[in-house]
Length: 605
Image (tube, rainbow, N blue to C red; front, side, top):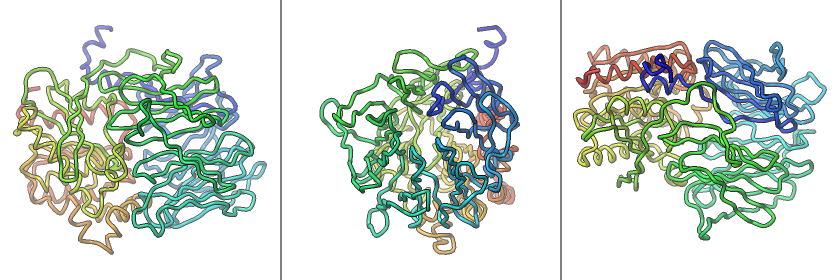
């Protein structure tokens, strides 16, 4: 490590260190791959010729690019072009070897993305979502410049998968109006006719979700791999869309026990086996499953989190792995690191401890990290977004930075989080936000008497849904928190609903049981602006001015009320969308948050 590098604080080194995503490879040219990296200081798409060992930056935009896909033959790179993170854009493409970008599908106007599927025969399917039009899936047939509409509905949906021979299209949709539980429709592309339906929501008291995981990678094979919730968690099954035959895959561990938590799967090349991911209590592991024999084989992965995995044609599996203590790298089951970004490896951090606390809705799982020294510590409750997401035992620069500054970090997988079964995820009904804060409050009530946390130095923090819960928690639990840090939050739910993208309006209607016009009292009860007068703690808010998910107007409404009431606050606005893809911008934002906390908690820098 150079003297220049060692002079940079460890937390900044973690952010500045280059990192890479799991490479995605072309089906018919597996040595051509794409990945995303921040090696130039902005997250952009890179092409990797694995045979030649060459890497090339594909995109170069001021606010970064992350959405891209290779054509099956590996000849073209498709990437999504929006404006400064507003998520409203079009698909462009360029040759894998390099060359000018071109509009990939002329005739499709800028819209929110709802999926992309590229067929081996040249078939192109582009999904778009528009606030006034709903979801549309556009089809361009091989050899034609004309664009047809193959699917349209006012409710949100998207492309599930295109069959190997491009004859069938699976659509994940929410036509029934329940955005938490999708159904699947399969269309025959020659004429657009429906050939199969799978719906476990309509007419059911307890709806179950479905998700398309992909058609079998073999011509003439009409099996679709599907995720279902028939037994109260996500599990894979095979559905032959031609015959209607369903084969549920009841997977068991080495001791013959069914797996707790959620299971997902993807096809291995050749369609004779599956790559299975088991996700439970903030960690994950990988298995291979032979369809003919039912043999399940554990793949060697360290304890921690697999953030993505892909089965290669040579029989190996490549996966992106990290733990809270160890930074991420792309590894192979062959025993080596496949891809690591150039430059120094970022400093490690502190391992997590698992804590279970009894809450009003059941046992709540929290991940705890302690700094050096003896407690009680100033403590950051870092709240995850989603809400259908979860914090995991994986490497993250934000928590590591707080630890470096002497703070303990607590992350709570509240009701609504994934990885604990459907009942835990689906527990969010009507009392949105208030339910999650009950669980966060229960963990806070453990953290103080346990000796972990100093009750006079408790920081509630989060981004997106976590930012929303931060503002709501400061207002509904004003005695619990010393400080609030809210990034890209929902702050005024009624105004947020008016301005947000249609996919999120659909989710809100599902969560609240209707629109603001239908159940206004529920939205008001769950809106941070309702409780702004009760705030006692100073609050720091950051927001992207182009954010379509947590739009800026509703944040401005909240800030205006803070100003009217004379509440202590600071606001930082930046020119991007729902977060930034620029490394220095991320560092700046975290530096501002840490500085705000140190000043208001009376701690020396």
